[in-house]
Length: 450
Ligand code: TYD
Ligand code: MG
Image (cartoon, rainbow, N blue to C red; front, side):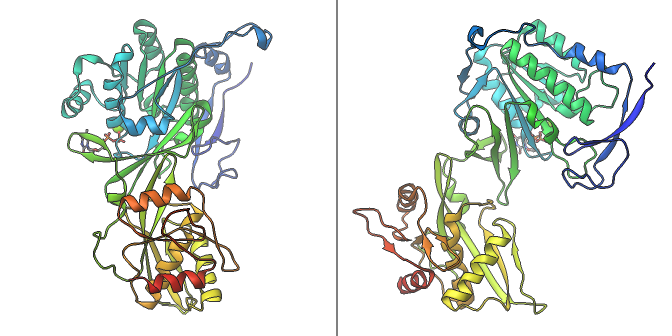
């Protein structure tokens, strides 16, 4: 007879080892291995909660196609990130730090989805009365939402069988456990088993299943990353400085992952931010700018908005220059600084460089490089740029300014907000725009603007 054994599982990525390791060889996390008991006979039992999708082997041509349908969640920003509404059936993981608003948005979504059929909120974190108080605060129709506060997977499967819900929210996946897996709730094996069983149930019973997963820095609980491959869509909630929250898709079987949803938390729940530019521009329009500020437009999925890049340079404290930048990749800033120094004669190698994006948004787009270079130039020289100037361009190591994608969208977003001086390497027909071939020329043109 087989004996029970122990194994160690990385709570961040799920790697299994027979010995405890201080650092995970797969994902590099420190102190992330947790001990799990493996009961010799458990593997057969585990199968009991894993529904079988189809027992028969058949030719693909004989397979009947299930019609998946999409419906509006009632929250435009969530629909946008999901690729145009909630798919049914589907399984969606919503991750984020505690307190960011996962329970709030899911309760709001459930209430507005109640027209689809019965909806079920499963809470292992809060009591029914706590959930009710939250729903009252959010002004939701209390009758439309069913609540089930339990942490046992088997009990939950029975409830699903009984009420056949259209939409289910599990708050949170880390609190759920099945008796067929011998480890504690929140361990990698429990999360995987519960997530797998429920996403299969979602498929067979045509349910839109949402799993809330906490992302904890301490690694006490398993990170939701280990179940990402089991679900159709993975959304993450992120904080920004100004109280704005971003919802991003990092995986989506039913849509693109470029879209972001932008929310702010009010006293009565999360509200969609329709015009993000107002959050991302900290200086008042029309006022003279301080030195070190430049504007550009970023394209996030179907939306384009203006952002403000802020730069500051101070003599290097240690003789060795450093770049401090959380929102834009440090390597990119170093490269832009080197290009400015070599091709525009701006000395930066003896300076510490600070770069920020107002509103706290992280940006990866290459099109912002020209604006970063102009902000740095303005900071170093102490001369403000024109408050009506927006620039777009990627910089090459040879100091050339390269064209950007979606120029038309970016120009339109800029004009809509009253930015009339547009600088870019290419021009749109019939529009007043300045063009520049290289960084030196870009600096000359922008310095001449008032
Ligand atoms: P919550 O949804 O509980 O976060 P999570 O489930 O991700 O842990 O919401 C967190 C915060 O939002 C909490 O500190 C209270 C605040 N809040 C509001 O400001 N307004 C509201 O209407 C609600 C419901 C919560
Ligand atoms: Mg919560």
